[in-house]
Length: 332
Image (cartoon, rainbow, N blue to C red; front, side):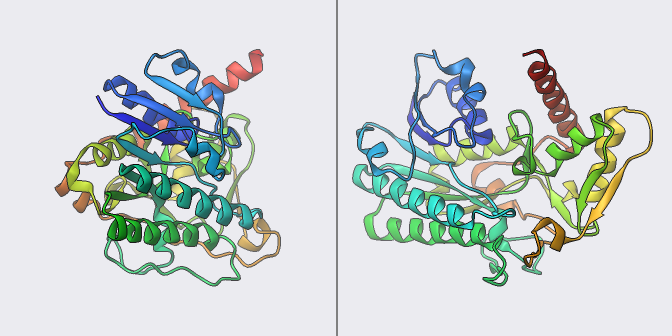
């Protein structure tokens, strides 16, 4: 049994990782300020003898001062995502200050630190599939969406510098389009969350740009398996790893909408509207990633990681979960 600390434990990835860690017999101290996470996500585990929940903020150093040093691994998932609708300052300050606090705590106690990064750091790189040793090509500083990528690149460099200076192991994980149960049911959770809602309300789906941009979606159980293997295997130490489905799961956003409509079994034709980027970003300049495809051969070689759930199978599960949540909320 290992003793884990998980930040962002009540969020999408955090709550699914918590389930995995407890199932494997580990103990967990989970931290979340519940600004984006939900207590409902971790409700089944609040009375578990091997789980302690702290409703605290990672940007406050006092949060870490109360933890003590008897832990083996710190997994840092808490973050503020792409500031599509503003709040770039929150993205930068939360991600950078939170990352600094996490790494300083790991340094003080000499414990392994696994940090969540993002596929967004590859930016507009034309080199596909994205390899961990490839270039990171973010766009103009005038485009606020890149604040997220920049904040995560800072965390990556800081983590590697800490490891070099102080000798404790770090692992950096770049995630690709995770989805599934406990996903946030808004754009924060990804386009599939919004598309599912619109389909079942028989409303028009808003598709940004021309819909031909592609993503590689990864079912949450696969993402969690990648996190878990990175945490327990020494082979991951000091590495940057893509955690995602293979290139055969790449799909255009428009085809994703069509897939969700088909598996929903709802009557009628798909209703969608193409929304120019300047409209979704309230007149500010916006840049999108045209293709996002990972090379996962490194994680497969080092960890034995390989995503198993196909996009249609996974989207069915995500849809069923989201519909149950709607029904539950209506019943309240």
